[in-house]
Every structure is written in structure tokens, then in C-alpha cells.
Image (cartoon, rainbow, N blue to C red; front, side, top):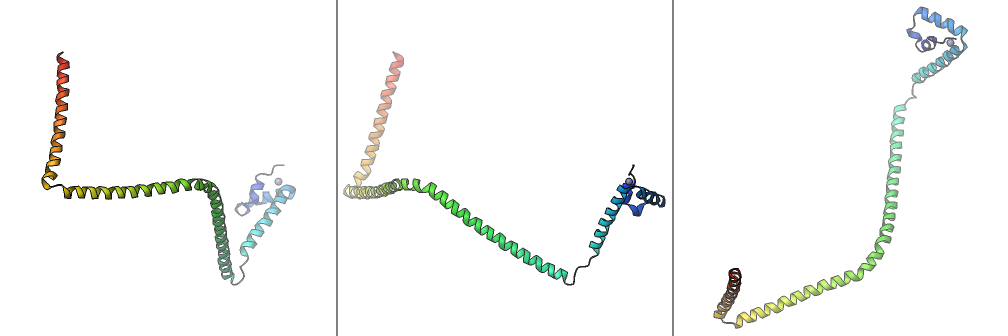
Length: 182
Ligand SMILES: [Zn+2]
């Protein structure tokens, strides 16, 4: 049996023409399948209409808001609890992991660290002593050397150095020129 267009017409009965309505009713009388569909659809339609027509009990919106606030508070409490628990567990796991990972290397590193600290402290102390000794020596030397020597000594040293460099340069220059000539 042909069920179309009657099946579609079932859902749009209000828009059908008089002829279409009559044709549909004729079909429903002879077709059990479409009749069952029509009954089921009427049932669903009735439920939808009655559901939308049920008025909420007085004070509904107040109760709803209270319920919603309460629900949100419970949710946020639960979320806070979950957050705290997660953080605590995470921290515990991290500390265990890092502790297990770092403790042996830390224990191994302790003597090295201590010796390094000792070395650095020694170096600093030695440097201080060295500076102190040098300072005393320089001061003592400067105090004991007359002013003339303080000027003459560096100048003569500089002159000697210059002479030495010049001599070396000339010596090399001669060797090079001799080499070129011969
Ligand atoms: Zn049918």
C-alpha cells in the first residue's frame, strides 16, 4: 500500500486543504500502519502541549534560584576540594619524585660542594693576604726609596726596555736584510 503523501500529511494537518483532509481520513480508515502513526503522533503532540501548559507552582522561581545558588555552592565547594586534593597529591608526588631523584646526587655533591666552598674561601683569604703583603711591601719600598729613584727607576727601566726592543728589532732587521742580500 502507498503511504505517501498521507504519512507527511499527518504532521501538517492544520495546513491541509479540505480535499487533502478527506483523502487522509479515507486512507487512515483503510491503513492500520498510518492509523497507528497518527495515534502515536497525536499522543506525542498532546504531551508536548500539556507539558508546556503546566503552570509552575507558586514561588517556583524563588525556589529555583535558591536551588541554583545551593547547587553552585556545592559544586564550587566540591571543585575547591578537588583542587586542594589534586594540589596536595601533586605536591606529595613531586616531593617524593624529586626527593628520590635529588637526594643521592645531593649527598654525592655535598663533599664536592664543601671542598669547593673551602677552596674559594682559601683563595679569597690568600688573595687578601697577598694583597696585604704586596701593599705593605709597596708602601715600605716607596717610603724607603727617595723621590729621585721613584722617578728615575721607572724611567730607566722604561728606557732599558725600549733599548732592548730597539736592539732586537735592529738585529732582526739586519739579519733579514743580510739574508735578502746573500
Ligand atoms: Zn498508510
